[in-house]
Length: 444
Image (cartoon, rainbow, N blue to C red; front, side, top):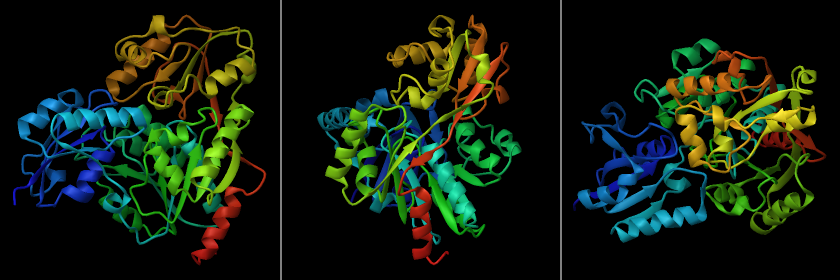
């Protein structure tokens, strides 16, 4: 039988994982191309032969998604696999219709064909959207596990935007590792909090090789730190899904976040301290309808501001986490909340000061106005972010990003940083749930 010809639509993450887990050594298929979107400047590359395996001695081209129909017809493609995340259901079906009209089958791949089994217990933290609070929830779970004396190795959803061969397996244990692997702002935001806790975190491209390297360190628990609203790459023993009452209804309206809602053992309703009661209740009703057996944890993400007195009466520029504002579709984050809470005289519009790809970001994500997204997917974009901040006519920069931007940029004006941590409200707590989990696994 002739091989089925396949295109994998992606954004340098789930697409590579699906290929590695299912297609790499599968003689029944020929993956003719990846397509790329969402992340700037990731198309025009090749998924290298060193990672693609013996069936692909020349590697696999990575094309812009705009060429999808052309590629389907040129290669007489049989199947197109959608393999990126945080997409409205309407958007997913629009892509499906485009693929069908071009003559190919349209597919989504599920856990059975893409999840790898670990020799260790796995706890996963996922979400229904980007920006729900996965990171602080993961940190909370990590701290709880370590308080019980458990050795934890964390593995982060991929962000391989550079040299894919060099990024096959990445281990981060101190700040020198961030420099060694030439990490972007987006990568640093996820890895630094683990390093600050003197905890090891892995990431990269080949997630079976990554898992085996992590297992070789003999942890008690593997902690999956999810990305966007994707579901885990590993078979999971305890799945924690974070939902956001600031975006009520999104928990059942975005792919594949609704899968995380349906699969969750535990659902954390985050940010309750700043959400409307109507939003909280709508989320709660959707949980009751779609996953009534899940344990629900109520939580807040209070902000902590260094030198909050410096904000009062100042004209400020607010910089927030990039992905949360862009494809996460949030209009503001912790920095904006701090500016309002501590009496900033004015939050300035960053758009007149934007340069390069930052200008393009505002054009693409038109809901953004008073906040600067900390875009930093590569060295060039990090420099453009720095220039945008330094051009702004303000008294103070409020940094609401998960890392301190002053570590990776040279700012020409004073700045204060805003951080946030997860705090459970009432019972049950994550500590209660994790303690019971460890007891069932014979680890306590």
